[in-house]
Length: 389
Image (cartoon, rainbow, N blue to C red; front, side, top):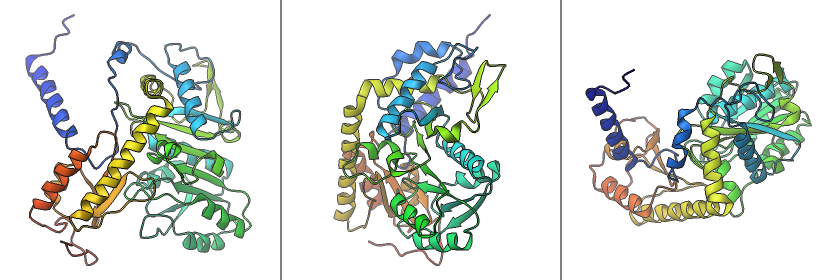
């Protein structure tokens, strides 16, 4: 069989590679990380890996990386203060699957429950809630993106007959806000609500806070029931992936024996990537806890530098404690587009991921400052703020 690619298709691949490298040099607005040379793993791309089923149980499909997946889960359990025998997890396709899994478990635990989430929650939650058929109420957010606990309290008081399911943001998508789990639990206690479920969406911050000084409460030590983290954001992989962890009492409720694969399944997907766990394992083993701690510290240093650089230009930029997300006024959309800056309304943000250097920040700010001031030309609303130069 002739497996040679036609010349025109080879040219197309070459163009894709060039475009990818060019775009990667101007990527400030979205969280993605590529910390290592993964070439030692390339030989494994020739195998049909499939991590179907429970990674902690044998399967009749044995071309898998379940043992590496178990190592990844054990590592995440250790940094998230998960009780050794009380928490189960697996490697997902990304944060959305992890959040769906948490909502699936919550609905099975509390069939008549109502999901409470703030208006700054990731856009996928509305889709997830439709898919799992869960009742839900959106509560207000504070101006900085954190949940409005007074609105949560008022809403809970109206629906005290339905057990609450709290979807907590551990770093909101646009502003990096972290919902205060202690405040949430205080609201629940004040309403005499003792039967509830708390899921933490820690897509990016879940790998930042374990290595931060004076981290906000967010993990199993803070009383959560499940948590979702995106692996391609940090610690980083070439393909979207993630990790979900949940208390075993919840996961066992949905476990089903499947004769065809010779094992139990308590995941969302049937067939799952066997390559993603291998890549996550490689990053974890190569960098280790101290390596990741140093990388997080480096990112925090660049984030501080970014705030200071905006300030020297007379522009207010800000970030939440321990967040790598820098929020600033949306202006000069052409430059924002070039640097792949995420926008929402009159706000823009950049994220100081490991590949972002002070030089990147300097180049972006110079272009952004020198461009004609269009004052968020693509968003004109009566609430839009004037350009602040």
